[in-house]
Image 1 (cartoon, one colour):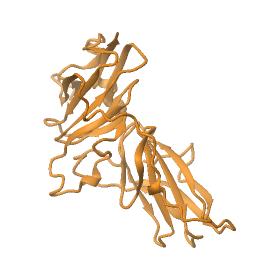
Image 2: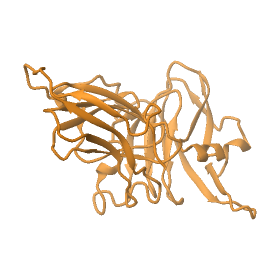
Image 3: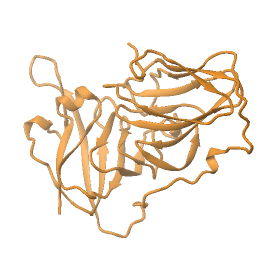
Length: 287
């Protein structure tokens, strides 16, 4: 299997040295996580992520190891190369079957694209350090003194009850097609705190929330800081997102404030087959 970028497998892009580029990557695949790594043996180029899912970090973050991107998530990043390279610089997704946050879930192992870095007459008149930028931020919901409504959800995944051998997917033991009615009402303007758990199922699942972005306030990743590094998580506490990984045998808690729109909306696993099988819930935003 392989992935394509704008319809092309492993495309080549020519870029100039000493020039800052901004890219937006959308993981539009139906399943599998991207585990992005920059292969640059000459140490010519640097990457800084500036936003995820369209929401800025407080400051750009330099990519030193890998960047995990679940299905449906988006990444904006800056890239700058100090000089021309003699070999192509490659952005790849590195397959890793031992990534603790995902358990046995799939990471793609394939080329994404290659960069041909050419020389340039452009010379920056000053040292450009993206990490010195302060980017716009929404309000922080972690320290609010407002009333917060708390709800807990559990991913449900088990073998089917008939002889077909299918897998049941749902939330809180219910598959979405069974009842398309909203499972709860959410008041417009009231802060919601939702926890999604994956403790008793055999793989990780990415949670995607429609209509409103959320702020990550807490996460439980078994073994984080012991047998694995927290850098494997595709978010940091305090980040604003709309699609993140609920860790294998772990949980994630986020807050959001419904604004602007009322009506029926969705939260679901962003692995296409899982949401189609029922790992999805409807809720109603009301005045």
